[in-house]
Each structure stands twice: as C-alpha cells, then as structure tokens.
Image 1 (cartoon, rainbow, N blue to C red):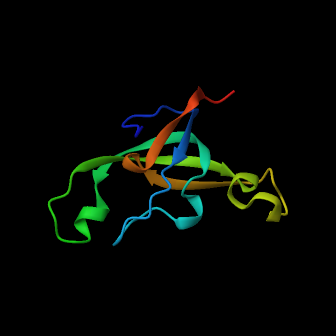
Image 2 (tube, rainbow, N blue to C red; image 1 turned 30 degrees about the vertical axis):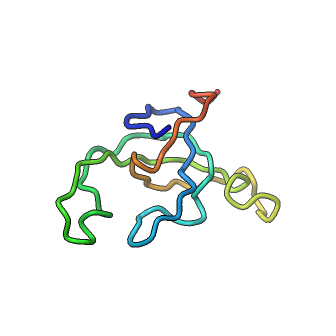
Length: 100
C-alpha cells in the first residue's frame, strides 16, 4: 500500500520495485525500512520530467535508515544512520505505523 502522506516518526518501507528507465530511488534502499524524519514539501516528479512528460506534484520526504537495515551483517557501525530523500510514491507505511 503506497502512502501519500506519511508523518514524522512513521515507519516506512521503500518499494522494492525495479521499473525500467529513470528513477530517483537508490537501489540499496529499495525494500528497506526507515523512519520519516520530515516532509520536505511538494515538487514535480523528476521521473516524469526526465522523459519530458507533464509532471505530477509529489511530496519529498527525508527518511532515516540505520546502517544495520541497509547493509545487514556487513556494516561496521550498525547504529549509524543515513538520511535519504525519497519521493512519496516510493514509500509504503509499515504495519507497525509510528516508530517507538
């Protein structure tokens, strides 16, 4: 279920899709779970703009991931974090909803 408007502290998963063409979501974050840090606001969808298409407005979110979530057993500092900007159409709300 894609989320159009997650809130700060919501636990979200980045869609694990692999569509062809130009996408702005890093491979290493697809399928990973993070916490919404904040909404950065609406912007035109760069995935549509890349092909010269009329672009819909989508919200951009800053999502925080732990190194353990991204790299698993291969990470040296599992509690370190990475913040990434991810568009709303790539995010799905985790069943647990808000982080504790």
